[in-house]
Length: 111
Length: 112
Figure 1: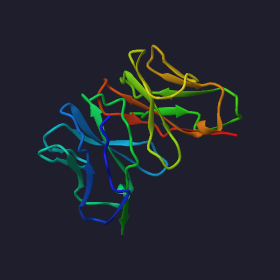
Figure 2: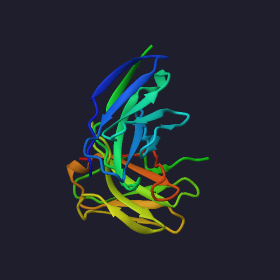
Figure 3: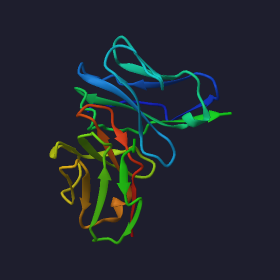
């Protein structure tokens, strides 16, 4: 499986935008980019996924670089509830059930 | 709508014993996946079932087995428990293969 690289941790202030980076330089043409997050004492939660084009949903936006070697998850206005571990995952041909989670980025949100 | 439900929430077993963990998917979801999450690490894929057939298996020993029932619920069995099997076991369901996963809050297994 192609691997992803994320910073171990990031800090943000409440009500400010947050940009969570992910590098995936060995991504193949059929790999989808998935983002999940895990709040304390809960199972992971789906955030967003995409292939080539930028994607938006009610939770976040996903910006994918033109060469697809990196992507950024954008939380437009961080709240305390957004404090979680964010995982960037690649899946072959949108086989979204068999995901390889890495260590993720722990996002801390300061009031 | 009810989310993915897992039982039990916590479990303590002794080395060498066997354990069965249960998962009820979201109504209408036909795919169930199992993941193991060791403290401080991301979840690791164990199994995926779709329409009662095994569709994928992660890098886990044969002591781990699973099945999916006609009502799409699922069980994960682990035999001959080792201390290293202590982890949070997560079940996830999805409408179809490749659909976003919906995770339960897991079963915390402690092996002593």
